[in-house]
Length: 186
Image (cartoon, rainbow, N blue to C red; front, side):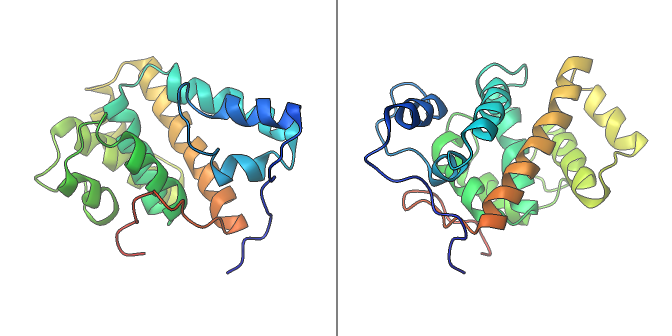
C-alpha cells in the first residue's frame, strides 16, 4: 500500500521545523519520524497530540519498563509495525527487555514464563482492553496489586493513546522507519 498522506518535506518552514523538533527527544540527531511529519500536515491537531504524547512518554508515573511493555503490546496487538519498531529500536534496552521478551511482546501470552508477575498483569490488561475495551475484575485486581491508582489510570490512557497512534500509522499506511526493528510476524 502506498502511504496515503505524505509527510512534510524539507526545507521546512521555520514554524514546522520547530514543531518537528519539539516532537523529538532532546539530543536526537536523526530526521524527525514520518509519523510526526504526517501529523504536521494538520499543525493544530499535531500540537494538541504532542502535549499528551510527551506527557505520557517523558513525564508519566509509570516506569520506562512498564511504559514500553504496554506500548509494545498495544502496537503489536494492533498490528502497528511502524510504532512497535520505533519503540523497540529506541527504548527496549532502557526498558530492560531481553531479545526474547521483545519478540514475545508480539507473539507471546501474558502467561509466558519470560514475564514477571508484574509484566504478566500489564500484558493481561492490554490484551483485555484490546479485545473489548474492558478489564475484568481479575485483570484490574492484578494491576492494582502492582500499581497505585494514578499509575493504573495512566496505564489506561497510555494504552488508549497508543491505540490511537496505531490507528493513525496504520490508517495512513506509514512504512516502518529504516532503522526500526521489524515486528515479528509482519
